[in-house]
Length: 305
Length: 304
Image (cartoon, rainbow over the protein chains, first blue to last red):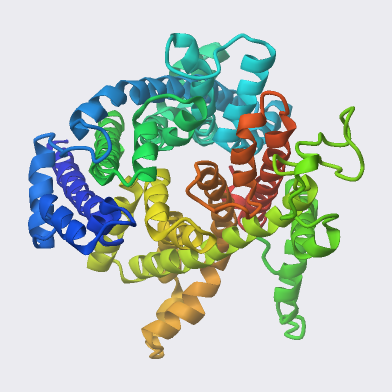
């Protein structure tokens, strides 16, 4: 277990390092930053001044190492647009996105796992077909369209929920549904397939043969083993949600990390964009690492393979 | 999979009929698969509409008519047949914009998949065939790519290369190759172990020849399935990018852009976003149904 964990940790750390290089290069290779910051009407002298002021005249490697060193100390520099450090901006926006992601994931799991189990238990029947049909239809509805549709129905027509913002817990209901929506098909398919596989195994036949009630067999014996791969998927989906929340935050006007990144991209606020890309990628790497370890812990076959 | 019937053995004359019979079986299975038939019909219809857009569109999709702004569609009280789906905030005919918008979505889906499919297949086939260190390095690249938040990186890159149709295609093409790489890698690993690849190697075929004429035709089924699903993915991402204002730029009639432009009017005229959203859902649903159907039909053992 220890060698498995340390090996995975080494991979995770090197992927995180590579991602930091990509995040850095993404903005530095795509054009002259100084010109972009200075704006279209700047003179050559002003551009040179800005280049020097932001340290953009130094060698690329040096700039990267400097940026990385500061990033490791949670110092991402100052925002070009806001009179504030990137770190405090990110810190103030992070809770909204994290809350949104957590509720969305919970919602997706609570809907998808029972649906997957039902589809597997009643495999081949109308229940199974309806669940799969729901999945196919669900995958075709873009999250932002669903979000706008929810606003029209529940905020504009029924007046049940607020249209936008983050003022109360009610503001999180529609965004979480829209964001969690996209994870439902994947989680459902995986729990259905896992369940189907487990249900056809010998020990389930034994459990049934010795006369246990079907609910006990399904919930206690089968679900426990069928759920293992879902753990890893849930972690990965949480990472996707944090990245995908940018669209939902834009629809519902929520001042989260995604909204910050969206504004920053539109305003050429490069330090903020770099920081958000790096932070989301590192969170994703950490999540997949934890999922790998949790999986290996739950299923010894993985760590011995 | 269907296997040639045992009747063929011995006569020798009937043996060449086997591939044809298998193809006929594939066709019969395709038509027996309701999802594939439904999705295929929808997709063919949308492609036909996109190709015949100039003939079908009742008006010029770019023609502004400020005197007739935000006319509701025909099923509402104030609607009329002149503008069957109404007009947008600049008085442009909504039906015509919707019809021309199909071209943009299909163009982006197709070209993106051509770029990303090429990148992903090269990476996946090399990783799967050569294995060892090549596999380790290429898998590492795929892992790194998966760690990058797609929407955010696509937005930032689209903004940097300049938001345009070409920009969106290049950015999405360079980003969405991960699933191609993952799927072709495992498919190639299976094929590389087979006897006929060993035989090809034994008679001295070059590596390139083995990859192109032995491996590639045999992973084609898996490749087509991924290509359809990734096409849907690209179309959805383009819509999201355009919705956020950093994808296709006005006045192009992209469906995502139409939703974005209609957002401020959605409280009083929900159809402004409902119509392009419905078109988007129909196209993505059609492509996904075709992809899922093809997977069921070509590889029934992977169903699920």
